Image (cartoon, rainbow, N blue to C red; front, side, top):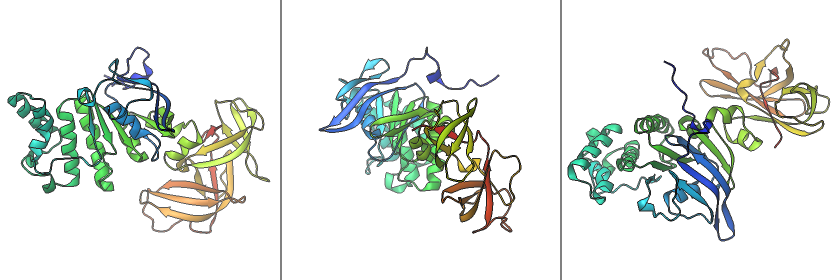
Length: 375
């Protein structure tokens, strides 16, 4: 039995759970969100990604009901939620600070919202036990928040947010306070929990790696606008602009002027006295048009000998080497002064480096390795 791929956004018959329709949010003269339209589907793990001040937290606060749009409307499950107060929305928000009650046990913290809703006692007990199990906190039920680790507190906050079975859970930089190793482990836990509960998660983060790890789709934002919405793989491999290419992962950007050289083939003039770079593009470019070739370091080969039959090969010298355990990144300076990063996987132990600082090297890549961008 083949597993069907989860991609409701590709199905025109699917109705989104959340709809932003031409939403603008102003604070005085400042436009925080600029005429934004976006659909998010049920059971998605959706990431809003961008630098500080790009509007991602404002979007989240509007979903939660802490801010109202200046223009446009926001729908949740087909209903305009503009007039609905925060406590009446099927939405829960988990803050970066977790906001746990220090004097209550973990059990009591998770039960808090259910008690406030005057749920029957046995229903509360069952639900809290379910949440403790889901977040693997059964052993810690009677402890106070200060008696457990940061990663465990993070899971308590998650359990408390999910206890009321919201349609939508909003997570504002939820892993910001954790150290890198714990953050990575917790990302996978979050994904498992999201999959188990089927709750729609919307996460705000400025950490590209986090967004790329957890999300079904990522919206890359800048200055109140969404620049690109797509799956992590599509955003990495096919960014729609230099901004997105540069924001996600490591990239080389080579500025050039384009000239068609065949069907979907282009010659890029990028430096005086250098042969043109060959690149493919399904997007048409006119003769002499400014273009940017975005090419990931792992798609560029580095060698001491001139490569045979590579469509793009140029000589340079090694300026810098960063050794990252599983990868080595070489910074290679080309004759015109341009620096290109290239990456190789360290499959063998480094007994002796073939390539070291100041070495003359060749870098090469195929015509399809980069993405040609017009903006």
